[in-house]
Image (cartoon, rainbow, N blue to C red; front, side, top):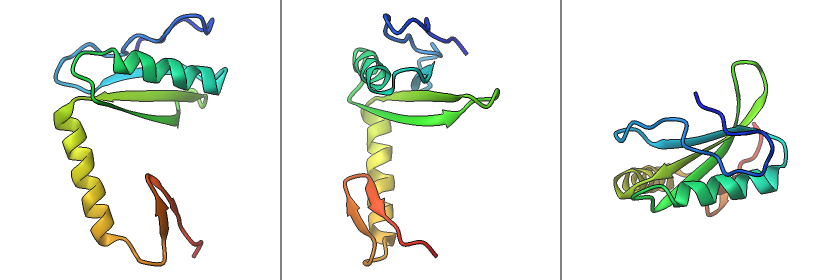
Length: 106
């Protein structure tokens, strides 16, 4: 997996170049606000991108990484289908605001 420069001065490049896969932008966490912005802006410039999903994951070495995926219209449609399914399965006492749901501990 290709990692972008760690100086925080350059936007990340996609870590995969296969057109059939979702373009991923990955970097180690240093300045969260700046990096998420850089990832989102870089992903939005990727061809055919209509939306960006960003998350934080634990890498193989145990370090936290920011991962953003640029979504084309087909992938965004899949995300919308999943959200609609989740909406139908949602328990009424769980309050949701956009993608954020408040779930009571068991």
